[in-house]
Figure 1 (cartoon, rainbow, N blue to C red):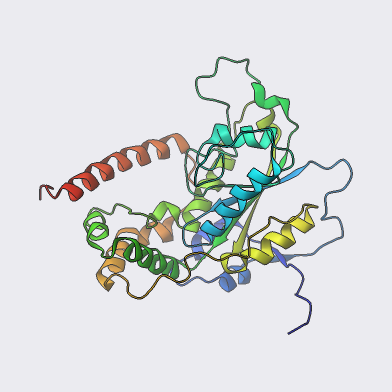
Figure 2 (figure 1 turned 30 degrees about the vertical axis):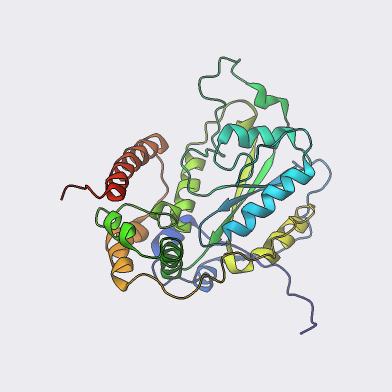
Length: 318
């Protein structure tokens, strides 16, 4: 088929409609049905005097995250010469909010930034500067101009996402023993954390907008959140970049982890996950108390790590 691709279509959906209607069987088409089309009035591209746009790609396991992480990592290394990047698997600032805003400030040539989606410590909307910093209230983040951040969050059907994450566990471990024992306590393992499902990631991000008390220049930044079908990651990244007057992020057409071999975990694993988390899926709303959520996650992670250690040693108490 040599016909040109159809133009990008934009729709707007209310958060409360997403919360109520996004369940196990929801597809991207279902989301479009509850949305309102937005029409391009010819003013979409950033014009003279507009705030500079930067795209933040929220990387979520089993939603083309490896493709995006590797693309962002190579783009940083090739485009930004002001920072000597450490040798690591993830892009600079992927899991560290202070490093993220450093690379935003110092690498003006970079327009696409990947971060770990669903990380409660990645306060990209309500950044308050380095923790424990004794600098003046404005902080050195004020050395940059305010920016318009476009947050890109991938969508994947819940059941498909769960099954793909479980298969990844089997591909790495060769069995599902650890996942099963952790799920007995409703703890996550590898990619299979409820906090990493797109709706939960969006709940956290929306919550940050309610708690947006950033200091200095961060309080003047603008934020828009876009939900897209993860299967269209290459065309979406290219077309959205073009709309905002950016060069597209190279290498987003590459695919990783597609050929993972045969086999997966028995049905009991997905059944345990659904028993633990389906209610969370249907009842998820914006996380408005971020401090309490961070405290809850920290406590939960500590308990999970303690259980994981005894599973590895084989001396867990029943």
